[in-house]
Length: 473
Image (cartoon, rainbow, N blue to C red; front, side):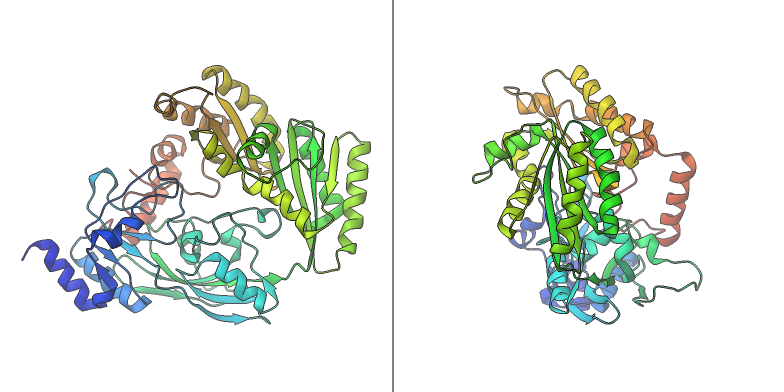
């Protein structure tokens, strides 16, 4: 019996025949990343049905020095959930069978779910209880509770509700030696020593495999008022954001920045889309207020906001959605940006953040510098200006060969990340580090930060078996 067959037999005995496979056909759908750019490989895939089964499997892997890579919905963009990259032999742990919403407590505004449950399923369960789970992502139909916690996901509502870190009340996880760490309490106040769940949030599966989570719910937004606004530049958008907060307070739930280049790609490649108004501007803002009151209580502040913005020259034109259909049309323009860019050609994507007040300065410096260094490229930034997170995407020149353009990847990344660092920002706002940003993380982090992170990793995973390719080289 070979070592592989011995491990397969042992794992099947521990977790059950249906929870382990070496069938290439069953494994294959889990080996391609969301964008189809990276391909993993593994001989064994685990699909545990509960935490205890996963605990037994991880304990075996720990004792035999077998590295494991956890995977949720496989919607990541930094190749953090693929085994076997760079020739490593790793076991894939898929959480796809652990999909239950276990409990919803409407009075406590909390929900308990397994790690493989999709964000859309959590949202549906919260809505049925008269509550709202505010995390909102383009991939919410596929991305999972465990994956979004492991990457500390963000999305369009961070300006009001925060990232996943703020929405997690408790977690359960299997640690590197197979022990189960359980802290699923919904308590908002708990000072019993170190808050260990905070280490697991954003750790990308390198410190433990999340199996369950207690999530914080919010009162349902019963009404929304949405506007699509033309602005002359990001500086005007920043002033508009300040004005929006003055008028809307904490009801400002969305403030998205869109450039004309990106909007034009949507109009070209996405059937059924149209401009909200005739005025063509270099930049636009998608602004939304949400609240528990009737819509009439939101449209008044929004109308007054836009009136003041137009008078002050901050807005050049604006349209308020008069129906759910029109609101959906506005949102489709924003949500189709990534799809339209993929149809336009190859791109080098940057998930970056800078302090909100420095967004205009960053764009003013970084965009012309990239265009000068790489002639013909099309810088197409968009994203969550309300929290400083931009998707600073660089499109291949028209007529250029895809391979020639992608050969510039490292140089573009380095230049963009240097500008981000100069403006006090982060090279990973919501997608994580994964395997593709490890070198840049090491280059741009302080020695103390890296040494501390490595010390934590060594303390919780001394054998280095948990997602060994992520975060660190």
